[in-house]
Length: 591
Image 1 (tube, helix red, strand yellow):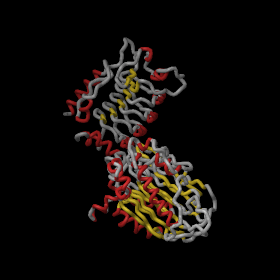
Image 2: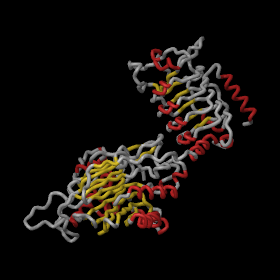
Image 3: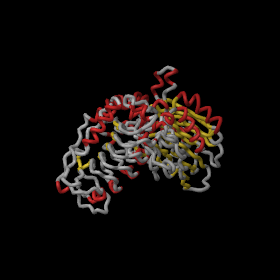
């Protein structure tokens, strides 16, 4: 479209706006969807300047007359509007209408009380005389469409970038010369209308390309500054000067092959690049200075080529690793990209006795009672998650002890709660066999101990929320057959963090550190998932958080007791359920 044609059509649009707040916009490549999208009818006009705002329901029907009030030019009077019996002093409550049309009302200012209507999904402020958009617009978190076309805006507030649910942002025919980089956070935009603004380079160059306005969003995202480092997380001391104490860290590091722009479109490409993230992950773990580190989503090649050597050189960590079961069928090159679980321990404090791997897929195939069940074959055997068990022995403890550390990553899909339950049950059964090997011998004539005397840590990304069946199974030792997580399928803690996984569509606790209550106590852990930040966070990963999970950490101490016995001593009992305490860690759906 030539410049002359564009000027002519925008002039026609402005002329038409005298009679309608929804004047025709200049056709452009970035607005072809505009003509296909049904537009609401023009607002009611009267013979005076007094007009009615339109409240639009989901089906675009005008509300009953009793829900409409005549308003003057001042938008402040709009804020007395009620659709229920609520007091005018109360915050507005969700109503049957979710869209508000204030287009073509000759407004010069917007009262900030408008932005209390957080249930709005569409807001039309086009064809007015607005010079300024209040930063309180950030409160309208549910907005999917915001039309500010044909006003006199010279800029928009950076807070507009917090409306990450926006799919259409229309800024046609304003006086914009500058766009704040925070608009780069609007990763869900399908339509970004900018034509008719006196923008300069580099914006004008993007607009001349196919889909150019959306390229501007990508450009802004890449130039969002990293910002100030978040404050340190608050550590809670529960017990002072406990002897034989140690610390454990659990962290899903988000392996490179899963960290794609399609999955994390809100993250700048430089912050998503593995070369940047691996250094950040490494230094983050080193700064926590834990005695035991359990990592999930660690690629085979990265463990062998980078982390194993770096940890040993810098912090005296020794490590063990096992990949997911799919690596069995792959060649050497493909195998290096398979992720798995890695457990590191400080060699000055612990020595490795042995390690065990638990491949849920293989266990299900070896169990006749499971092979006979169709649901196990179709749902469990096709998932190749694993568990890694290491048996450690203390070196500098006043009361020497052995410690069994379990590191696992359960299936990701939130709709497959039954699969995660079966995987957890298999994990506990295999763990019980290993625990029995290290239970102390019972003297002749003495009763067997009712509880396990071997300290156990069970760490990992369980992809399970506190209300899940997995959580109930680990805390109570059993789960009823009719638990909702079983769905229709048939098969033969202390305080928790505010979240361990954060994306724009999910925030919750799905990572956990479980410990055997009879043998271990907790002397400290973190109060929150992250330290305070100086600005809003769309989701992880970002410049300061290299994974979509956050590390969880706890300090524990060995309570002492009889820890004798050995692998050849078969007199031990099984691990009784319901004896695990939990330190909350991460919540998510993935991989």
